[in-house]
Amino acid sequence: MPIEIEKKYRLTEEQAESLRGRLNEAVGAPARGVEFEESTLYAGAGLAPSVRALRLRRVGGRAVLTLKERQPSADAIKHQREEEIGVSDAATTDAILRALGYAPALVYEKRRETWRLGDAEVVLDELPFGWFAEIEGDRDAILRAEQALGLDAAEAELRTYPTLTRERGARRGDLIEARFGGN
View 1 (tube, rainbow, N blue to C red):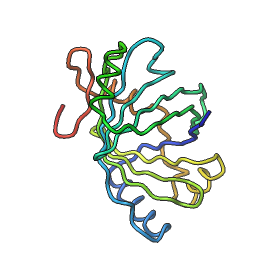
View 2: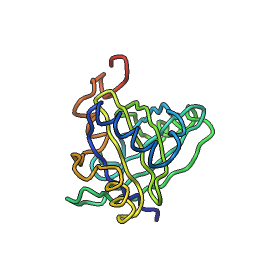
View 3: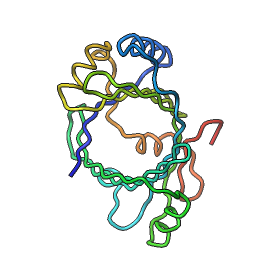
């Protein structure tokens, strides 16, 4: 069972710009470009927002279906089961999920830049409700990257993007959305 280990930080726009500069210097190259992502999380049997989530993410012409199961912890470094599979047709995958009784519950958009720093992946995310950085890797790799980037004093964000979307998104019937350019 694949386990994702990550730490998330809430940033101001100025902190995000500064981090981007430190990353480009530390890695020696800019990010692999900015990717626009749209994530749809579903509600239905066997799913619970704070424990188990089913997500269909669209990135460019690609799509990924993900099951996440959060392991309870008060630690800022989070562990969760993450099973992912690439799907060739997001619209058909959505139709299959709906036919099985799952319904879109929330949608959020983000712009993501990604770097590799040692054994860690570092991402800078812009969402309609703010800027965030995530470091993913094993615990030691996360702490090394955090130290190298000066993030050890940054505010850890313990809430997930879906939780933040529920708190700050716009409700449209049974769907909650956080989109750029207004909701």
